[in-house]
Length: 338
Ligand SMILES: [Fe+2]
Image (cartoon, rainbow, N blue to C red; front, side, top):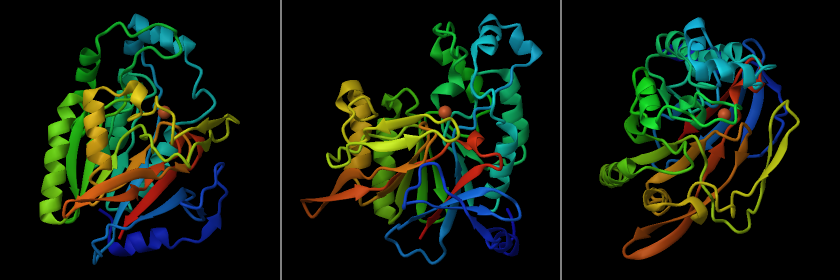
């Protein structure tokens, strides 16, 4: 943990205006003049009037891409190495080092999935050495890339998912499917796996209990996951997502696309239950953070909570953040919870 003086120095560096490829007034984006990182500032109102703000450093979609000689012995991985063309032109290592250096000046660091580009021991070794050994308190959620050995091969993974997950469990710093971690005294981080565009049965009771406990103890929950959820806001039909430096532009219908997590087309029982727990307890759930789209955009989620038998309608802010490799000095979303 850096000292207060070091932290003050780091974030008081001269700020150079920086135009993100997808500017959004919900993110205050600038470049630090001396150390070079792009910082994207987000403020969350906990509603608790915290005496000391809590600061979270967030990164997403690191896509560590390294096949070593042992990996090449594996037929699936050696074929993926030949087929996989992204992020060929992007350097993923230096941006990660820079981003994590900046995160170290925050109170906590959370990585929002796709830490690996595809599941190699070469990439896992770099995660262990460069992230988990240097920053043992880092938390990570699972993304779809983390557990696939087939990438752009047009072949399905041969090993069952559970076997692939066992490999990740051997070094992942927290429970891969669900974890609740305190952030200071009044905030709880919910690290939840929705990397298959759905939630899981094992998450329902845990989240229900954590919401109940937070309400009783006067705490708030922040949700950290790989994929964003549908907002169900009919006004917000589309959010334009621009994939930085690649020229790709996509419109993400966060309000209405029923294939997004929580939308009706792909909602099974567990997904529906978790989605409802998140969106119907907005007195406790105060923010959602996701990656997956490799682009920064804000998508306010329709939500509600119950008070004295009455349903109060409100919204939960949902922040989707950029992929890290697009920025040579890394991009960190600095979330200040007040
Ligand atoms: Fe990704």
